[in-house]
Length: 251
Image (cartoon, rainbow, N blue to C red; front, side, top):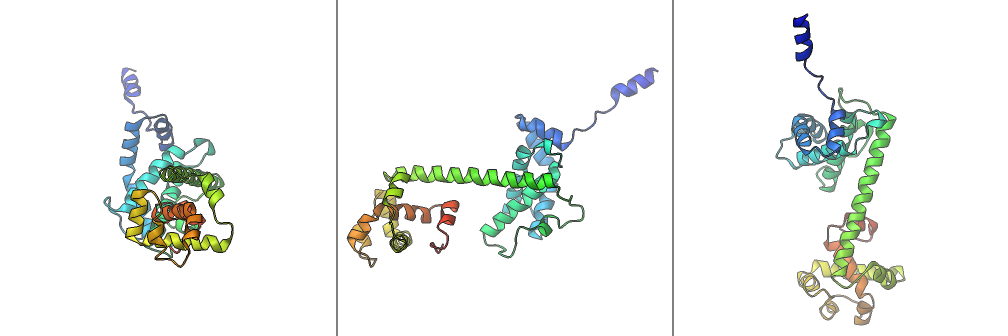
């Protein structure tokens, strides 16, 4: 009886699942987060490698993208949906790496599709709950990044004594006028002299600019605020704002 009691007392506790660990991490256990990320580096590396079709080293940028995606998946995971966190993390990692590859022009033929997500034999199939969870995650991420970008742009505009209201009120009314203003903005950005003036003086170098464009000084002055705003978008890291101007900006 004593031996049986000792056996029961010394019996190892059941190792907590990743889903259970995720709950503790979401409550703020940073040490556990670091441990889990370190333990799952082989999984992250394997998942990233499956997308890149080559062995990925921890020094590779793609591996860093995978780490960040795995980190996000842990915090975005919702156990109520009943799906595996590994499956959820796998999808998030693959899509984030694909986005990175496409944005950097490394493999333009890579597309986000089901065959790429489920390209391994041991890769778990996606449930409806997982698909919905991933879509909600991506929408939330997209919305958050869009808001952050707008706030960042609004802050930059304030340095030029401009606001979104100014842009609405001062934007050219006709399409041709807007396209001309965009072309002028492109001229500003492609000229180091003009762009440096704009960044340092916080105003448009109208006198210098009118010598380089086939537009009257009066037209430049009338669209000054719009030209400045477009110049800042073209020169800046504004993914969503540039996408809004897609088709008009050859960038």
